[in-house]
Figure (tube, rainbow, N blue to C red):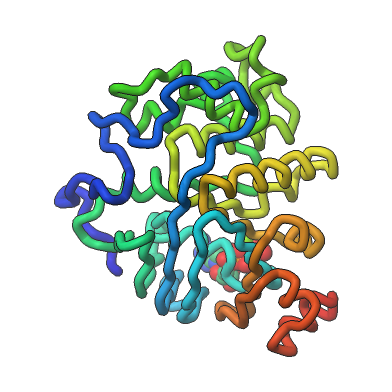
Length: 292
Ligand SMILES: Nc1ncnc2c1ncn2[C@@H]1O[C@H](COP(=O)(O)OP(=O)(O)OP(=O)(O)O)[C@@H](O)[C@H]1O
Ligand SMILES: [Mg+2]
């Protein structure tokens, strides 16, 4: 799966449910919902087959096979440096943006191969949204513009931006706290609110999959619980992968948990099983705090 030449890449495939710049998202809300949750929808299955990721000659991910089920939360755990973030960046094709980095293998969302040379990279990153460890709202933008930023990047023709912004902020559980100051800077919000703003920005483009790389590690326990509640809501609609170093968090939010070690996937199983009856001694040592 070498990087395709973006100049020869074609438009996104319709079955990916990703609108191109002049199309209306199929699943766009017809009217602004009045609840704080996003409506249910079928998520997408993401299948990784023999994924390897390299930084120059150094192999950081060593042949991972993994299936992320739709409408489930999968936690990725493992000691620092085991390749969790690298693997996530392969899924939305950010890894290849790092100079000298490349990946091989296959990553398929339903039946769409994300590394197909004909695929549009913008469509991939729209289909696979990412939330980072540190909330990263655009510093010069208002709350409204931050939420709409991804939308504007990928095209807003046929989209009622105001309506979509409200929908995304409601979906991210932030609307009530910001509805009277949408024109104020995003960076004026608390850390937890900023992270929910980043989640709103991610869901505003209606992705299929949301990757979260330690989204709560910079947050206090109350803000963390809010994000965890939100993850429960969001899984009704999206396929969610969350990297966490917090075992309690994995136990609270994740349906299944995958343990990585030294670039390999050691095991992936229902979360209860990973914590109570893991199949590999390395998993047991890690979840019981013996290393990592
Ligand atoms: N930009 C980079 N250039 C070179 N090597 C990198 C780069 N980013 C990560 N690595 C290396 O790849 C390996 C996997 O790193 P990665 O960041 O994926 O681990 P991680 O599991 O996310 O760790 P953490 O829990 O600390 O975030 C490590 O050995 C790391 O040093
Ligand atoms: Mg990481």
